Image (cartoon, rainbow, N blue to C red; front, side, top):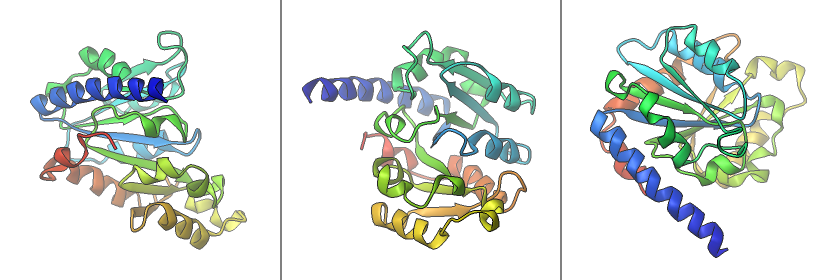
Length: 227
C-alpha cells in the first residue's frame, strides 16, 4: 500500500507542475477517458470540425501506433502522439510524467483548449491525474448497463459522462434507464449526454461543453488537487 501511495504522490507532484505550465500558457485541459472502442476519437472528429473560436489541440495516448492521431491530424488539428510502448513499459494509461515528457512538442501558446485522449481503459486512467482542469468519459451503449457498478472510480472521478452510440439502441438489449440508475448510484447527479458520434446526434451538446470550458471561471482550483 505504501508503494502505491508513493507512486501516486510522485505522480501528483508532476501533475501540479503540468498544471502550472498549462496555467502559464492559458490553456484549459480535458482528460477524456473511456474503454477501448467507446468512440472517443470519433466523437472528437465530429466535435473539432465546428468548434469555432476555440483553438483546440489533442494529446493522443495509445499503447502503440498513431491511427487515432492520424485521423485527427487530417482535420488540421495540432496533435501530439504519446505511445506507452516501449518508452513507458506499455502502460494502459497516461500518467503525469508521460504527459510532461510530451509537452515540449505541444504548441501550448497556440491553444485555448487541449484534449488529452487517454489510453482506452476503465481502471488505471482514473487513478492518475495529469494536470487536467476537467475529466470526462465516453461510455458506449454496447458496453452494458453494469459498467458504472463494475468500474465506479472511473465514473465517480468524471464531471461528464457521454453515452455514445445511441443510434444502436434499437438493435441492442440495453436498458438505458438501468444504466442511468447505476450511474447515479456511483456519481449522483453527474452530468450526462446521450450522443451518437456516427450520426452526429446531440454532438452539439458536447461541442458546447468543450467550448465553454476555457471561459469557465475557477475550473482549475476545483480539480488541481488529486481526488
